[in-house]
Image (cartoon, rainbow, N blue to C red; front, side, top):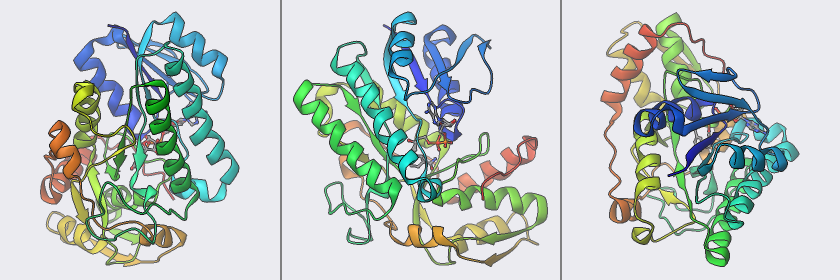
Length: 321
Ligand SMILES: NC(=O)c1ccc[n+]([C@@H]2O[C@H](COP(=O)([O-])OP(=O)(O)OC[C@H]3O[C@@H](n4cnc5c(N)ncnc54)[C@H](O)[C@@H]3O)[C@@H](O)[C@H]2O)c1
């Protein structure tokens, strides 16, 4: 069994994925890379390297030198940031994927994980319970890149038998690592601000529902999908997975049960428009049927975990804007 390479390991998901992969497969089996690594060299047995996924030569040499068999490609520009960096977002979100898919096509890696997003849906997709197969006409830079990425994953699978697995992540909520500029970041920021200042100014309207998921569920889904027998999968484009669906008002009310003085006010900005173009809930029956996906965290359980986690981890400062 070869090693696992995580690309984008300093980000919100990468930080936690490395930890779990290390626990499952052992420290020496995971190589963590990022264009801005949090550290370099060996830390707690894991090797951290600086690497730009757009540098295909460096990527190929890392794959060869460290005998990588699986790649988790997490490097991307997220939805809010992508709107002001159209070309860089397209470049990173597409060419990063091509560089990895090409290595898989050449047989240098065996398996790829590439996350898509609920951003592939757009204003013309069904709003409620959006199905796996649906109209996909995203109207954001990020959504367009994710939707094209899904097509490329399917193409490389069909044409070259590349084993590339994918999930349309909803908004991911976590306290150990901060979000990197997405539209659903409000659902993380709100906890930090509620604990620090007992108030939050929300950039999404009060009653906009979005699909969300607690980080532990997202990491488990990722690893379960990568471990399952290839023959049980019915799609190599990207799986819908669902866990929670809530509005800013719902989460504010839940937080108030622990922080009674908490106050929220609403000041929607451009991210509100992005949020309103996305579904409010997702149908994930294929993931449940094919590989037994099931979430563990509901709004109550997640809120408690977030509040306890942030209080015991107060060195992190909310950075999203
Ligand atoms: N976090 C979410 O809520 C969410 C939701 C849906 C999909 N996703 C997808 O999951 C993946 C990971 O998301 P995240 O939230 O951890 O993102 P993030 O922004 O927190 O982390 C991305 C990481 O990629 C690194 N990076 C940027 N350019 C790079 C390059 N050229 N080479 C190597 N590394 C580079 C960044 O330094 C950063 O550490 C992305 O593909 C994202 O689109 C995330």
